[in-house]
Length: 246
Image (tube, rainbow, N blue to C red; front, side):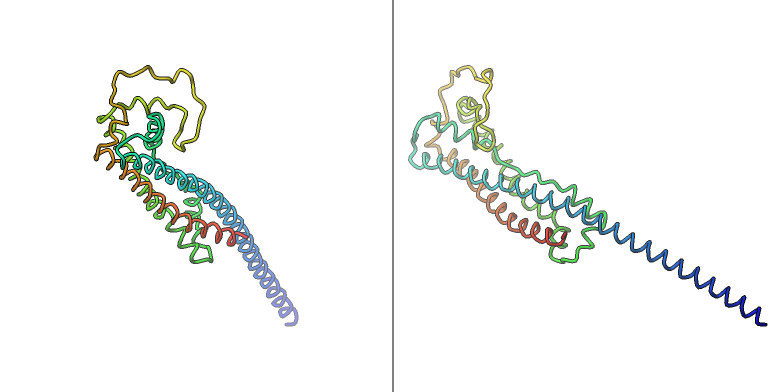
């Protein structure tokens, strides 16, 4: 009887040891899984933060260039209000050359998509930040809507202008890019002279030309305002994400 009780105790002890070992293994596995998940989340959020900082740099460019569009348009409108050239025709050509272009941001979202698919964004404790990031692509679409309109309007203006006057003057200015900054010029880019005398200055007393410039200014203003509003949201997201990832 004593032997039987001893064997029973041994078996119970053995079963308890096995049970504890299994539970411990599960606990260690769960702990390790949690550690790995947190490390993965931290890596994802670091990538998202870098992506948002890149978007911030692009947005700074967008705000500056939309302001440039308004500035150039206002300079031309000053001439149309008087119906005469202010300065040289080359100066007017340079203003029009800048208005041929409209900046459109190309914000990266790959890291945010990966973080969303992995469940990282859903696990963020900051509810405002989580809401912002889950709706981020919609916010980008709202930002792009104004910029796309501006881009389309600049293209329409270029086509309209090509039917109303010679584009030789503005097209001859090859030392500028979309930002209006100087770039290196290749000598073989110079154009031969034109025989058409209807340059841009001939349109300064034309209401349709003035209306085109007004539309460019309106698009520049709306794009600028949308970008400034988005910048505030972006700064909030960057600040909260930085805090959440520490």
